[in-house]
Length: 319
Ligand code: PAP
Image 1 (cartoon, helix red, strand yellow):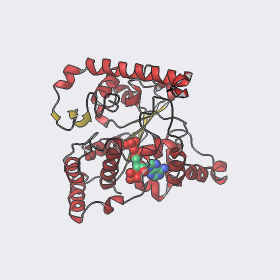
Image 2 (cartoon, rainbow, N blue to C red):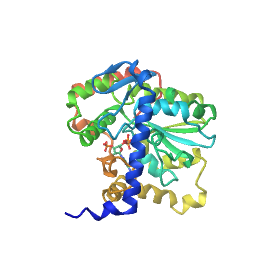
Image 3 (cartoon, helix red, strand yellow):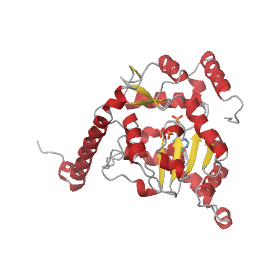
Image 4 (tube, helix red, strand yellow):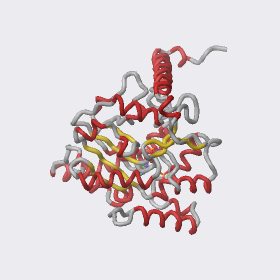
């Protein structure tokens, strides 16, 4: 039988080489931090606790994907050098990063965690994303006063979105919803505890308002245009009044709507670049506020609401 044509194409070969190189670098990094990681507290679902937050470690899920692992974070802390002009889009997973990335004035916004395994990381891009906790950010990001845009989403929807995501990524790995709920509420989930993640960036936004902008997914849904203007101003690309009059802001909002983006990304799945380990459409599910009510019982909603009330007590974080 003939091999598929794509196998012989230079693009496919280059992508294969790049993937091999990525796996090799990943193995070297994982080996480098072996002793440090082996000393960390761990639980049997593949997470370990580092600087107060839970992260995957080693070859989590499968041998080709250790992205967002604790080793990636350690490597970034040792090697990543921010530039003072860099801007970072930060979030706990499933809080609206994909949307925020689309609304930002760059074609490609890489996650620094994923880039750390590449031989030619796109760090010179100027705009990057991260799911890291505020406390674990590479020091140069803080020392240079880089601008950080944090997007926060209500924990019930974050939980439901993450649960569906895990199911799509690897069905046999995902825990039953009740077990996953218990873990999430006790803070044991990738990037968790969710509440500490949010509080870290929220407090930074109060202490350093010129450096850290705190947005919510719910506000972005409610008044996308206004939030986009805030975002543009903060990252140093404000709209002129002519651009606002010319409906440019509204056009950007329309182009980045859930309907438009999820449609575009349905047909944009077979990228040859190894930068995309997962197909694009996995980042689009419903894109609404309050879908958790369709999955969580009144009792579970009460439990998570009580935790949120207690943890965010005295903080002006509303959804
Ligand atoms: P990540 O952590 O993997 O980067 P992230 O993009 O932060 O994921 O969050 C995914 C959520 O944003 C999904 O929510 P859902 O599961 O509740 O539906 C996804 O649908 C939603 N999302 C993605 N793009 C948009 C958009 N343009 N508008 C609104 N919501 C969006």
